Length: 284
Length: 216
Image (cartoon, rainbow over all chains, first blue to last red; front, side, top):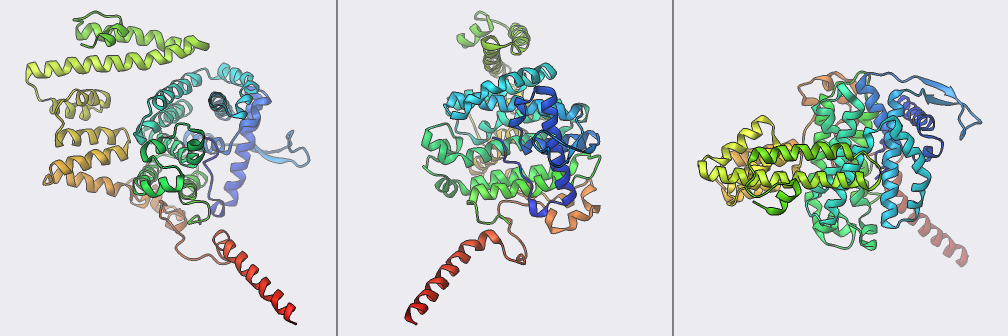
């Protein structure tokens, strides 16, 4: 479920690229500080996006410094200074990654073995932010229950992931969380789940794993599913994009929000089209 | 009342609404605390939370259905008042307790789904409502609005922050959807789309050249 949130790079301003990378490096450092070195390897750019969003909505500026790090010791890099928000988001990343690895382990995936390596980081993350575990665990179990019951309602299956994101946003934004921020994160969670289901369609069918889209359309490949459920899926995605646009227009930002706008308004629809139509079509 | 549900809450047949509420709240508080614990205890607490939630919902649903019948009150109105209060859970509970499901039921269910942001399910329910009552203008109007929603344009937002910004007049930042395509073609070509074409051209040219040289 990681790695779906990407910017539309040709349309990304240089300044935002710098910020994006600095936030990523900053998070990596924060994880190192908060949860230990081993946990650093599970970081994704999704969290750099979350970090930009949360900093901006909460009105906390980011300080970018030129520093060296273990991985890039030759040249000094622009790195966002570690602060409370980045540590909290680092913990979110570690907890999410740990649960994902445990899930993979249960499914019998090879890299599920990595969960062991992660356990210590996960424990340390909980020491700093104990509420995170409750949020993630409850929704993971809710999702597992829905999967076991063989649910055939697309909106219902997305609910746990979406609600998880909503609750995480409430936790991270605290008093800055509004109806619109909650809805935006809800939509993001739903989108990530759907994008993942669509992307993994063929793999899930092959391994006979739960995939809600297979339950609904009952065909053997993603291409056929897209053909069969085209109109419905396009409606679902388009309504999600519209809702995100509406939320974005109603959220109060403290700084300019070109980076998150690029990702939400362009990156996410682009990624969806890429998955939906296959790699090369319509992805400008 | 459903015996199994009563058992989950630790109650006997004939429990009143207040008793059910009290038992539910006590159990909920207990498991909410336990779910943070490590290992099986925590997992079990999280599982029980869902279970008592369902049991409670079903029991209250049954009770409210009975009271609706005995009082003769209009359950539809109760759904509507719950919706006005923003109480989606109770609205859903009353809806679940209906036996007969007419157009109005599907319409209200569609509103509940909409509030939960289940847009696709909301659309489906609305379609059923319209099918059952094709002449109802209210349903049709709602359906039109629902479809309009997906064309939400940020530049029309009342907030105004998107109107003044220079970026938003730029086509790059208008919202995109599943059918978005570049409005004008890109100088230098769209690498990805033309790479295959390019390969084939090279291949053909190569063949041609080779055959020429062979002839010569």
